[in-house]
Image 1 (cartoon, rainbow, N blue to C red):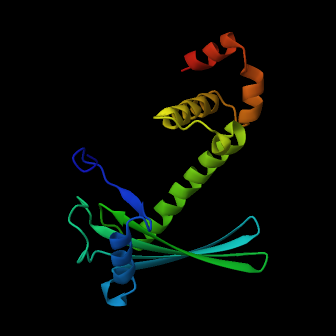
Image 2 (image 1 turned 180 degrees about the vertical axis):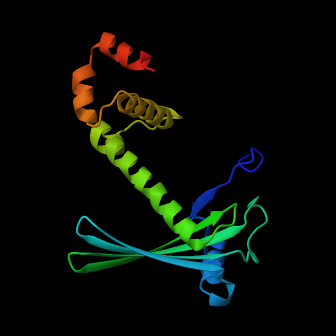
Image 3 (image 1 turned 90 degrees about the vertical axis):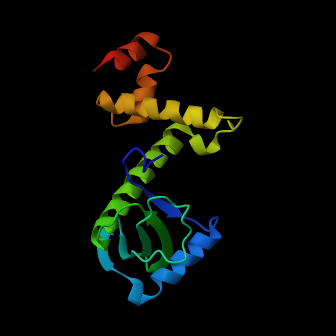
Length: 181
């Protein structure tokens, strides 16, 4: 559906796709199959993070059911915080070709957005503690939380807890927020 709508994808590959995971691991471990490499180091909030990205356009051995697949990506992250070093490797597949630097920046930006949204939803709305899990209820409540977050941000609120305190149980104030264009 993504490719049919003339869009592209970058999808994280986890160990629950063992054949794909192993094939990407094998391909990206062979330097002769690497098309592009990028390394970016950033210092922020008392931590030093280095992201080494390798991409390959060699799709041999990967199932054809991944429609539109053009690139496999390996991201190796090394984080040093308080003299403790952690290493992590993640794999992705993409439906377009780009250099490793572009994927390095794009994947980092995506995680920055994802992490900040998840943090807000968990801290402000207690999403991780929620016991709502019947049928599509978890997805529906997540969508409602997204609407609330977007509505508050559209109306200039940066502190969502404060915004919720100001508007909770006041239908007139909530209606005004929703009507603002």
